[in-house]
Length: 80
Figure 1 (cartoon, rainbow, N blue to C red):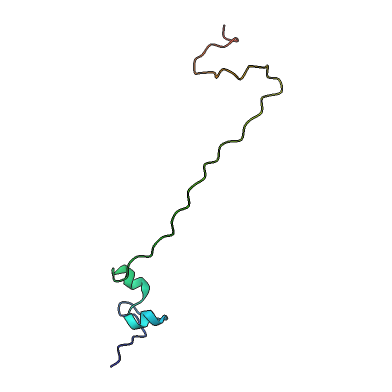
Figure 2: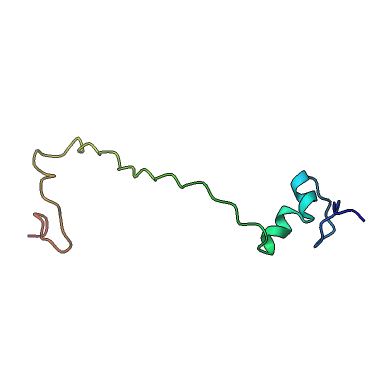
């Protein structure tokens, strides 16, 4: 009897790599059963936060009209 397997011990898949043939089970079955450590994920790239593009003032805006932000329920000239 030989210690080299051509099929996985746990499932009927054929073993293709030399290392899996030597072990006797495939990579997926080994990972599922905890016999092979999980693959390391590549380090995540830092996300670049993009700021919105500046909006030019409206062509009919008066100078200084954008200096004060309007808040909720703030009186305006139209409401007085």
